[in-house]
Image (cartoon, rainbow, N blue to C red; front, side):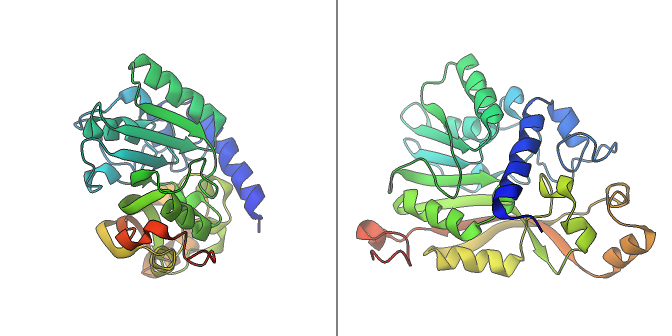
Length: 282
């Protein structure tokens, strides 16, 4: 079992590769990085092409939802995107906040930050910025953003409690998040969990749905609701890279579920003079 630092380095290495690939290359693999599968299954990503603000150069096909669809973003808002990649969700969010708003993307991968900044420069955007940093230690001051979004990233973060505590910290009192992510119902086969490629882009690293929701509530968020949920059917052509025939059959018959969810939560208005719950300052 890899420790948190090893897992971070693994994800960073994989996403450095992905940053240099096209959307078509990434969608042809469940894990994003080449070598996982030759089958063209975009089994997680949703279609962004009709959304205002969509920029094809920023779409690497890595999402598992459209968090901006449910994020209740308003003109003039400051929006933070966790794990912003090449900037896809940031540019869609910018169309919603308008010229008077601001969008900040945070990603730990230098290659992704470079690609996102290049895309923003091409579009001459002056209210979208990208900062390199980790979600467990966000490079923002407290109480700074109105809305937090994220798309299929937090499942890759080893310490999800810290990630949601940081999300709580940077949100203004009365602010909220809408995050798309991958969760599980039931235990995945060990071979699937331990596969490095699956960890770096698909399922491994995801936790049980109820545990995920409990972490959010324990961070202090209220009105926690699932805005959208869909089952992910991983094709046999992908599973066979990790499981033998009997293993695939057992997996199919086990009723184990892999789900894409978009979840919402509010930071209470009364949190104005309070830090993250459990930090000792409240």
